[in-house]
Length: 87
Image (cartoon, rainbow, N blue to C red; front, side, top):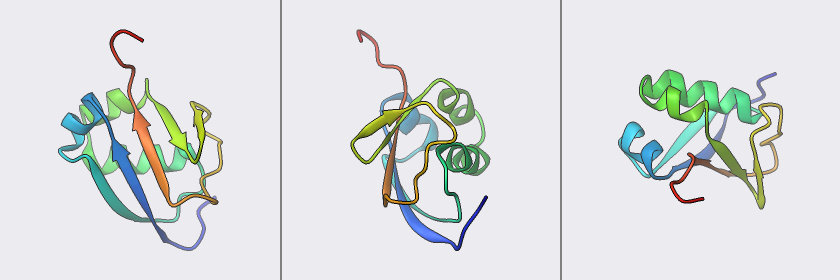
């Protein structure tokens, strides 16, 4: 599951930015999957970010995913992309 801690930059957009209170943060994390990282940011920021993260997509490298098992081991940045109005 978790590996040796490393630094990942998490970017928050739209409602996720409002809920987290920041557009970007650097986390020391052992998370290796989108799901582990999502759980960590939800624990860190609580509600209402948790409710936004559950309906969000994640930009991992050049790929957008909703798969909680998607690996984040090859990237140093993950963006949280909530549903956007109008598409």
